[in-house]
Length: 394
Ligand SMILES: *Cc1c(COP(=O)(O)O)cnc(C)c1O
Image 1 (cartoon, rainbow, N blue to C red):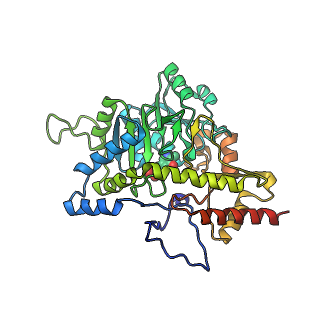
Image 2: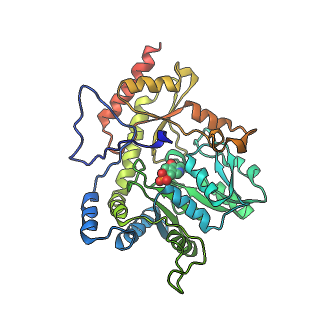
């Protein structure tokens, strides 16, 4: 888990950049970029005394974020994992049920299913998008299957029409793990407006951040209301302190929402920064032998939450060797997810199953620094370090 925790997150506030020690350059893999009214709104929030989840800030964030995603309703949560769990719980998924998820994802996608008492079935990925291979979903469906949970990996949307078709045919819910895909488009449609629920994370390294935080979006009013009730202890209308369902405390605070409102005002800027960094990376790395650059299907707008690269055998050194060399030049990187069937906590459920594409992504993949606040110079420096390492191999 420590692999995913940014131990000491520095925040970039334009005009207040940390002084860079020229002798020893260090480019972190991802930093939050607070480029708007974050400080102003948080200050206002504290001055007005809105520090719990009560008050106008959370509602304003929900409505602005829903609008940015093209969804009718949004329910803010304490983080992306609780958003996923709340979505599944709202749909009534529980013990005896199964949910289909990709093998190649972050642990939270699987854990959210586990919290409900249901089990997850895994589907392999495809090299074309690094996402779940939708052609393999149907063979994972059983009588117990209740939902499909596609994950828009590293910001590339899943082929949703195919998922929706399978879901309709087998009467399954679709819960999208959109933790990495703020602003992504599928055939021109916004991620967040397609499945029964979409779940976003606002962790510090996500494209939109509130430090910690999450959001459910949906177009179904009844589902939104039920999720809202379950989010806050499932208080009933008829009598105070009267509960007919097991609810949760997954509420977001106004302080987080204040940051979220400011970030949402910069939604399109934060997304286009990620995309223009990716374009620059790809143009500079194009032609480096043995590197596979991140995909973008013709029907997709990838938001490149992280700029991922695969180190093929023809590169001449392994992914881990390349990462070690880059670390020496001050470039921090991160290896790709470890598939769920490899995780010690879940491996026992998948003893005889293999997911070759997920395993290959895990072995070859890593991501380069991907902060929205990266500069052109930094990207040029990073790519020239890679080219130097590659040319020394010849
Ligand atoms: C970040 C992430 C989550 C979890 O979000 P948290 O806010 O950290 O709980 C879930 N799924 C995926 C794919 C993620 O990248």
